[in-house]
Image 1 (cartoon, rainbow, N blue to C red):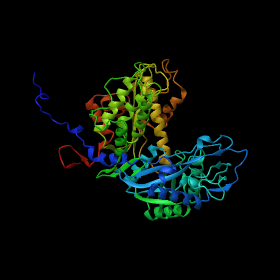
Image 2 (cartoon, rainbow, N blue to C red):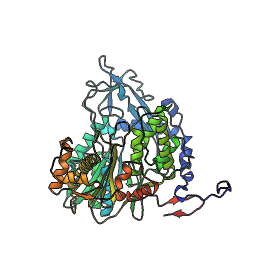
Image 3 (cartoon, rainbow, N blue to C red):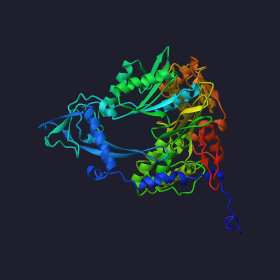
Image 4 (spheres, one colour):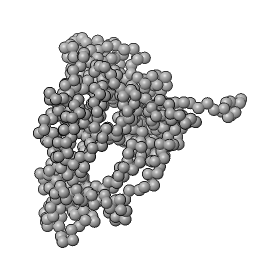
Length: 554
């Protein structure tokens, strides 16, 4: 039989014909630029030597330490230089960064530090603020704090060795007694957050009760929102002059770098489009393909096999470290790619003991990413702030534990702001019970989002609506009747009934064919996957280039 393949007749598939070669060129060039591993190798290059001098000058201006004789009965931590080439979203070099980092792993708890936890803004909050700013037509500003941790004041007695290459010739045996936090110290993030949040509260900001890294400034002149993720800041507001006034106040207290309009935040590219904003991680996805040596891999349509359920049985994979590294990196990619949530969650359940089947599933995800490397989450302008959620469950989907998988997606208007795919912590005795537990998890997230909106002074036009494709679960949530088959369900799940009873939540039935959370609980067929992916607003970049054509297709 002579097939079209044997006859050389090839019809390219448009959805897989994306070119990443042009995008990979800057990143392949950067592979040859190795960052130095220590002071001696860095001192041979003027750009790195200048970067180290700038760091030392910043440390001296902030009065970070004082030189004292080495204590006889106190721990002294080491330090080293860390070098990083800062890149733009297109992969080009922005600047060279040298940072002096304390070796915090040698600190002793109770002697050098006590509390270390420091909050950071949640990705859901970031997407929520971007959606509100886009709808209101507010300008998004991006700020960066230079040497942020140096502003944190230390209350513990901490000693550190002098920096390599910058040892005082008059006191070569002395050590540094730290006055301010330094990168690498266990308590540094917490000290910086306390210092920054205290200043914001002093000038009139309020911290959100739902997310402590979200700050709101609300007066008769206007409203300003500020997001803080370590030393990266996003600020937006209804009054442009008020925003600039607050930025000026921050600049007087901290050394800020105004990066202009928001375009690249925490590895997420924010690209303006005709509809609104496209949040993508193209650069991160390409770097991940480079790490896995799969830049030339053949693309595939879906990230997961239909009906497949991974199991712990099988031949162990020979390089579990590589598997864990790639699987962990894929988790960060789900910030803008809900279409990857279920598949990534499935392989991450076997990090402790990956098998050959698990690694094949991971490679399939990477092949799917290769074909959709320019895809991202679309946020668009809208006329309503209504909350709409979809909740679903795959009953007893895990062949090892027979636990179910919960999946939900929550929209603010038409913008997807929150989603999850996670295996339930207990076994459900029926599909109705599994769906009911998923309802409870989605309801908890909706209640949290409602609290944030209340802090932001945003009023919902109606009670949030949660869609479910299981009539029994809807009946259980709407009727305060405990039946013999449902009385064992934990009481904390029944707060769904309270919200439904007092009108704070509406439950609505939706057929399985329109259940958008279905792709977050199991592998679905290709037509369904494409439908759900579009409904979840995961779309290609408007500057997408197709093979064999020089034109750019919207």
